Image (tube, rainbow, N blue to C red):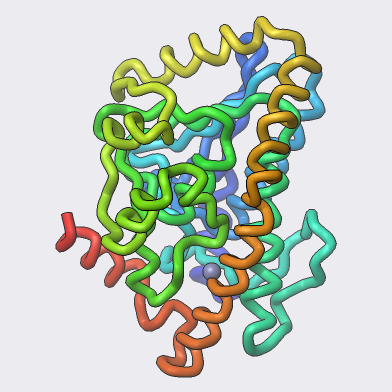
Length: 291
Ligand code: ZN
């Protein structure tokens, strides 16, 4: 680790906050200066927070939210705290990616930290609510989508612009389950931002709120759910997740994940860069031009 990286890591001790109030665990991504870009450290701190909430019998509902202007700008592809090269204390059965070469490096990392974690979080046996304000882009979508319910502010927007990198969507390929397939194609082909209102009409968002009311609206929804019996909630969630899996969600994601990694390797072979030469800056610029 360079000195810069060390300083960045030290400054980010508190990048996931955890608090419990009235039976609801509030898990807050806290890198507002980077629009809550998700680095490895945040991923594992989120996992710790979710585990804690699952283990606490007093917690009935879990809320995932983001500090600052935006819910999440996606995976960290360019902040000083980017730590894709570091080993982590893994939670799935994958081996360490950090000393691997070629396609193995990113495949193993993403199988653990993206697809693996997202599946693990989707299966949390307590209801989860994402509270989304501002941007919810690419990897940010994955975080919102693994939650059972989504409440979004009226100025929230969703997009997956990674097709611009030559990659067919983010690692957790839930697009055609979150959206009608034709809309999912439009969403991916264009990389366009989908505003909260349209996302609500598509059934991707449960409720629209405002910046001022988001916390209170989410708390009210969480309270209502928290009044239900724990096991009833857990089994209802399992039953509906099971329906999605019977509809092919899990195996569809397996195929998309393989295609996703074919393009990481293809990008590497043709451009020397797994993201096709795009980085946080060029993606942000392209996203701005599109809007
Ligand atoms: Zn990837």
